[in-house]
Image 1 (tube, helix red, strand yellow):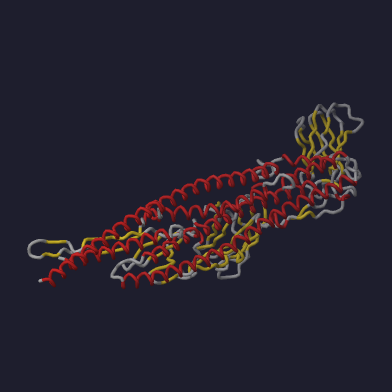
Image 2: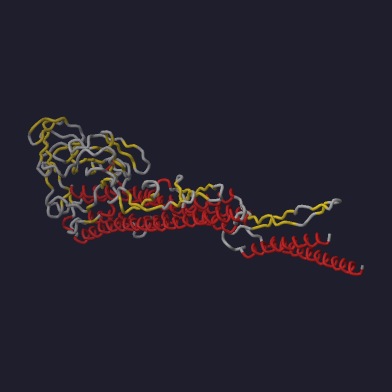
Length: 631
């Protein structure tokens, strides 16, 4: 019986000593990231029977377990992936808002100053100072478009750098997880199936770190190895094999990095990466930067064409048609690097009012062309054969293909992507500002009716007969001839269009009344074309004539600000979700120092009690020896 007391006491001392060691380890790692609280599992040793009674034989240390819940950890990883995506997206939407939404010195101010400069020229058409000021304001507009485009290009470069860094870190974490898998499998087998808690904590911490970079899902093999998947199920770590992600150039733009899996035959998986910091970087590029570049380019293209067209319709101080104020890059078409032949595509703008801010993919398959929006893959109605005589047309674009492509060939069409970056003011001579209208009208002094003629507007400055003198003579009060020929019905106030100009005669003319339309060369004091240019500020020239330049810029700035605010709101909400998920994990796995202090006291008292039992056993043994010696 004395030997039983010794055995029971020693087993208790060993168990309680181990319990104090585990508790002390918890205290030591209370602030260690990824550490899960450990606990000892004690069980009663098998009892022994002396034939009369069965008596317990002490305690066994069965296992050391860690406080871990896979469900709460999965929730944390998911919330971290979402937060990582929003954090990254927020970084760029905020920067874009600051770049484009700047009021002082921004694009909106530059455009307002440009139109105001036209008004100043209209007030004093012959003033060299006001004309020079207009040249300066035109340059300021060009600088604004170019500066914003350059800053957006800088964001794209930064995204490429961060994508490369994220991919390297993801690959490094994948390799570390694979290495820990091997150690865990070996350690578990050596310990008879008992899991190595420290290694498991380290692996879970790596998965948590990985989830901040990219969306992650996991499965566990029967031997304890963890399989890790990213994107839409691409394996990163699978049954001892580590897959490395790589960065590859976009098939339409080698400078734009995409993500590929080395075991997926080089297939790009960027479209499947929608969470984590990497997902946020890809979203910032496709959902924030590129749309703004395209919208800005759409405004630059339409504004340039409208300003140039009105300038071309007037006469400068030398009596010549106005030269272009601005130049802007046209649409860009890029063949995919996967195309099998050298067919090229030429794209031009056929209708600037129908132009959109979309990019498109032109595909040729089974003898037919199709056009889809690159942003969402939706199909765009397409007509024509793709030849010079019958170009493909869609959304204001004219598309000519140099030869029949191979089936499966694709081309990226970017109508406005390069417009803002290439925008430039090209007129430098103030005397070339076309403030005067190209034509002037007059009524003969001999007219006896009360009819009047409008000042006239230019419809087509390219018409070779625009500046030819034209005489409109009334045969009767209701009919007139042109240059002495023909007989045309007269309707008061109706437009009369000829030779690229348009006038309206109102009132009641008399037979023989004559009106003249002639060149306005020499009309240096005329300001009609300058007024028309100034009035373009509020004219609908985008979206099929429904939106003005001012409206388009305002809509762009408002949209950017709204998107930035939405992302900020979503980020704040997701941050709260992530904080709660962390608390949930801590409530399960975290170390509570108060609890550990109580446990230490408990194990200390238990250890002291076991030591006292051992002391009593020793005393009994000494008494037994003394009795035996006395006998």
